[in-house]
Image (cartoon, rainbow over the protein chains, first blue to last red):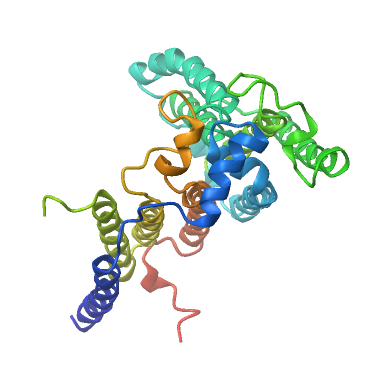
Length: 232
Length: 123
């Protein structure tokens, strides 16, 4: 009872802070100077219609690279944490074989939906510079497709070698594109190493589609590995 | 009430979600429920960040037929919080994955998910 009261008090105090923030919040009427610069310079200098993708994959691309490194470390860390315990319990192997198969509805649904999900993911990744989307989002869609596959067909074994190979290759190419920007354009991960092309066309915005594709492959592979690690 | 700005409504929703998450973290003893609380807190913060980036009568900062280049500065919402939230969602997923992995290991070591069983690091 005492504990419950303490929790209530803590949440109420935080709520008080939040209430003050909400009461004094005024909706902005115009962009802040930094945002205004981004909204102006992404279409003009980078040739990308989607300002957010321009920020993520060029202005803050180094940040994005660091983030992919975080994802990689999490995939490795989850593998380390989970594999250390799996060996001590001999019972885990026998339970995996007895895992109940998914119902026919789920299996057939997965057969129909999986190709569509992966095509949708490819569309999201490759249109990140033109409309809403990008590498992170498409990679997450790929991982959700893998999740559906693992739920519908529990016996599926993912090709871990292929996943880790394509993931490392995408990472290395990502850095190489960045270094190319350092040599041929204005700085690390500058997208103007490739011609900007016609504004709004599929092949435009310099290296942004390339970086988006690499990012999508990397995120998709990493998230799939993380999901698969939780199965065993 | 009727002329409440849209960003204030979204902001309030985000803060309420954060409070629910905090409540879940503090009041539950099951590790999985605590993880759900952390995820709710995380999602609430994302909503708050997106709400802060809203500009009155703004639209998504994507240049196309509906938003010509010369109108973009007047009508686009702030792209910086949106870009940061994409980053934050990925990190949130990573944190959740690590928490779940530890939860599995804790369950293997004690056979229970109640946080009361783990007294070693309690002071």
